Amino acid sequence: MVLVIAVSLLSLASPFINKLVVDLVVSNLQTPDASNLTKLIYLFVWLFVLDIAVSVLGSANQYIGDLLSSKLKTFLYKNFYEHVLSLDVEYFDNEMMGTILNKMIRGVNSTTEFIKSMVNNFLPFFLTALITIIVLAKYSILLSVLLLVLFPIYILISQKSSEKWMGFEEKKNALSDVSQGRVAESLVGIRIIKAFAREVAELKSLVTAREKIEVLTKGQSTIWHGYDLFRKVLLNLALIATFVYIIYQTYSGIYTVGEMTLLLQLVNQARWPLFAMSFILGQIQDASASAKSYFEVMEAKKTIADKFGAKPLSIVGQPTIDFTDVDFAYSKGKTVLSDISFHLPAGKKLALVGESGQGKSTIVNLLLRFYEPQSGSIKVFGSDISELTQASLHQNIAVVLQDTLLFSGSVEENIRLGNSKATLSQVVKAAKSANAHDFIVSLPQGYKTTIGERGVKLSGGQKQRIAIARAMLKNAPLVILDEATSSLDSKSEHEVQKGLSKLLEGRTAIIIAHRLSTISTADLVMVIEKGRVTQFGTQQELLDNKKGLYSQLVDLQRLPLSSFELVS
Image 1 (cartoon, rainbow, N blue to C red):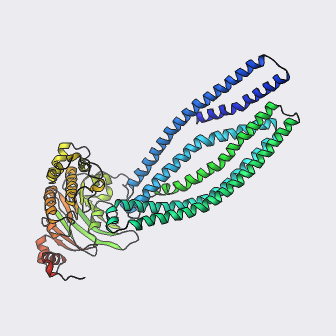
Image 2: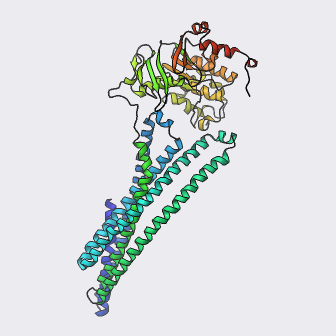
């Protein structure tokens, strides 16, 4: 800002030097004097020096402006991403990932450009206008008042046009967020898009949104340029009247030719601040509309936060899990779990069994504190998880899910997510324990092989074994397996089971599986029906109860395919 002020003041010095040059030339024409040439040379040198100074300071200003812009973008990106990462899982249940990303990029870019433009343009324009009015007041109060009145009128017109423009822009942004979010989802699920021949339909969805945006842009542009034309005509009429007045006063002998030159240049310079007002107001509205959704995300509140004085989980003692009278319902939804109570002793493995949609995964989500129960308590190591820091809770639970998420990057990087400080030898040890080492070393670059986004270059069994290696490397006392083998063929399941067996050794675990063979090693089984615990005990105890759901499920899975009635 210091450089901007310096450049503005130096730029305004040129009209005064031009005035001296013109007066000197006119004086020499009337009364020739050899010394006038020396004075002209000095004035030209000053003009040159001013021009160099403005160029140097302007370049320095642009350099600092670039750094400011980059730092500001980093600041905005960091704060947005940090906030989004801190939000509850429930927030993402209702948002498209592509939409969130679009809001972040648009908000950061519009805000950064606005700040940069304000620093580089608004301040020098304001100084130019202020100095112009002050200098004009010295020569003519009438001219000064005319410009002084013209500024608020021009700003008022610009404000009206910007308000109408903003209404259109918000509608365009809403359409853009949804369409861009859909595009992101389609690209992530490109295999589904192609498998169901949805390419044309997805393209049509984007084009339809863009066509709606085009219609809005047409109306927006019509109103904006209508106001803009009115502003320019009004400004030009006022400036022409001012020029006529200055020239007439000079013609009448009131102003010298040099003064006329000075005043004409100053009035002409005042044109640009006025023109800039509409541009700046437009940028304000643009930034406001574009950044609105950015700040809406920033204002999203966390419903699950560490309590004041929350303590890290102490792993001294036995890693037990206790649910006591837990009730849960998703927001604005029906009850999912009712009166869930169970005790899982240290080192034991609990299998959650039940039909789909009965609440098994919800129990796991509550244990991870992704959601809060409406009532009841959940304890690990004897401590209520609501009294613990979420970070310490998650650090002590290893998770292997059915839909294994691997990130673009190398095999080693994906395994190291379990422990970022692990050495390569520790990574290899974990991979061997997960029965993954042999196939990893057969890859083109071994552990350095890039596996592609979401691990698309690997089979389901290979991805699961990497996920198990990741969990092994984390070395957490509590383990959660959520349908970890349900999508695998028998051979892959056998390979993965070897890794799971080593992962579960000596650890307290909760296992969710539809394939009952997967939970054959479970110490305890809990059957969930319609969100309630209907059976709890050892596998043999539940098998002995022939009327219970567990015994019925086991019998069904033992039947050959021909025993089922096939419905077309």
